[in-house]
Image 1 (cartoon, rainbow, N blue to C red):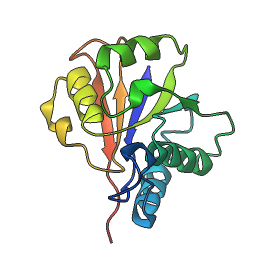
Image 2: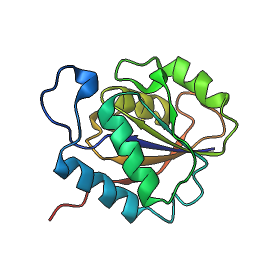
Image 3: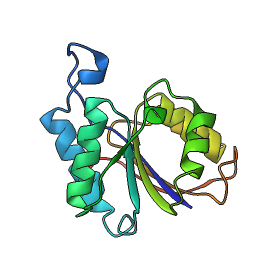
Image 4: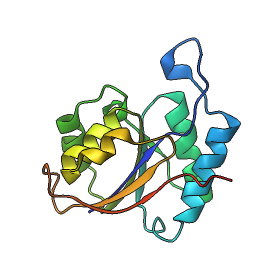
Length: 154
């Protein structure tokens, strides 16, 4: 199974609630950049799954647009900032898909990537970072990191 973890783009510092924070223009552009840079690798994505938080939904919508992805986005609380890793793994196993783009938050994404890969370097996953994993099963330490795409800087 191919799992592509995308942390949302840069978001505004303040909003009525954390869940309502929107992407900044810089964040939107960074997401477009990482998706465009890996368009070929993402061509086979079967599902795009996102946290319900506004900035994650916006990130998923940008990714879907860049990839000409016409299916409905799947929204799940399993990808919220304080999500449960094992709950997420059980959820992913129910999806019956081989290639999934998951849009989420820090520190959750860093913890998930570190657990699956067995490498703590992913604890510091930045905004609009896209990381590709290959996993036969969602077992700690048994996923291979195939590549990571960071936003391009000028």
